[in-house]
Length: 116
Image (cartoon, rainbow, N blue to C red; front, side, top):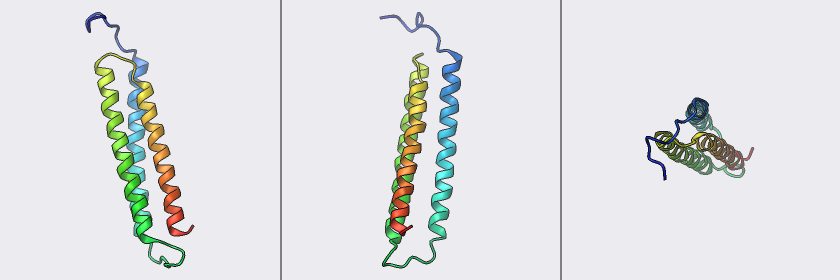
């Protein structure tokens, strides 16, 4: 096993892809929060026979919490891998893709809840 001093440096492209992916993840989280809050704020009329306001709130809240947990876990994992001089970009890109998937599934649940 090589010591940390002998381990090769992390390539600059790895750090660039990792940081870019994590920035996009944060931007996606902010956009998701904005869209989620506005979708609930303008849910004025929700007829009970075709729409569930509670279901919409649950879909938005669960999506935001899940995406937040995934984002923070991915950020920590990526930073730890970079600090240990290991390849980190797959974890950062994976974090972004998981957050996109989470938001997509959450949007689908929201549409089902409001009867759209």
